[in-house]
Image (spheres, one colour):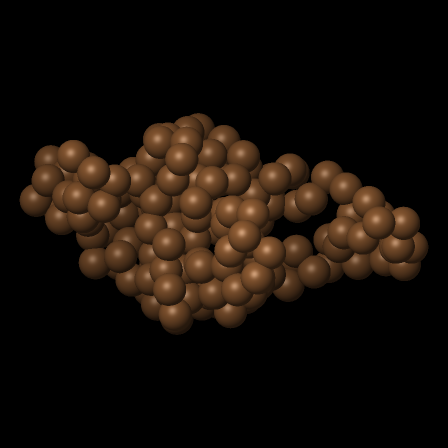
Length: 157
């Protein structure tokens, strides 16, 4: 069975034996991550499952590896993550689903994999990368699909 067919099978409530699906969605505040969030929330609503939103916080501040000075500290970063969490919770309420928001440190692919394994997720959902570098070097969706930890759906707007 291919990843696509196994993912489609997971989306069919008749194949889950009555068990509630667990869907992990990657969130970074980008428009494509919100598209993925909306898709995952609608799927959770349809199947009666659980939704877990994951924000992967980089271990190294963006720009520091290039010698760019970083002018914001932990307080600003915490505020940004708090705003992301608040927005995700508002959107989940609007769609009628409950959300568990998780902040993980590290690379997004590893963070999503860790969370999905810890909650025994049935599906990982991410938005399509809009960055040109990712089309050359490999996107988050592609890195997740190569791991085979759970079926992955990449939402294309």
